[in-house]
Image (cartoon, rainbow, N blue to C red; front, side, top):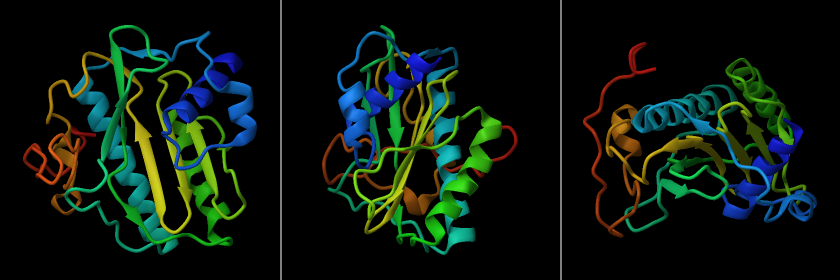
Length: 215
């Protein structure tokens, strides 16, 4: 388990999935390929939906409890809202990384409280303790890892607050079954998506209010 956790951290750094890297972790784990991330035995679209719902919950928590304000998605032509990678994943699997929007920054006082709150939310879901991956004191950044599913939550702030959630490694090809799973994304957060055609709107599934069935 410890070796797998080390590789999970290393793979995230290599892919640039974190908002900032950590020199200490990079030195120890950069480029390691001796272990793979676990493959998830769930449908691709289900993993996508789960990642989005978790991301939305964490964003809403920051808005409701830590006064970060509204979440602003990238403008069309800007950065993509979902990325992909198969690095570290078993053959035939791929993972998506979702970051729908950014919000106002936290503060030195509210940051540790927000990390504690994330820990409260994520621990019952199987995530480990937050791993500090910040490269500088003024750019706090932590990583939560679920070793069983390979799902990762990257949380930090600099000039803005950002949260990223991955699907873990799911069987299939990048963008499989798109736009299934995106129906839970509110209209106001829908902009670039995969950014396949820069500047053009993404294809999204019709919005469906999340219920117990979609969650």
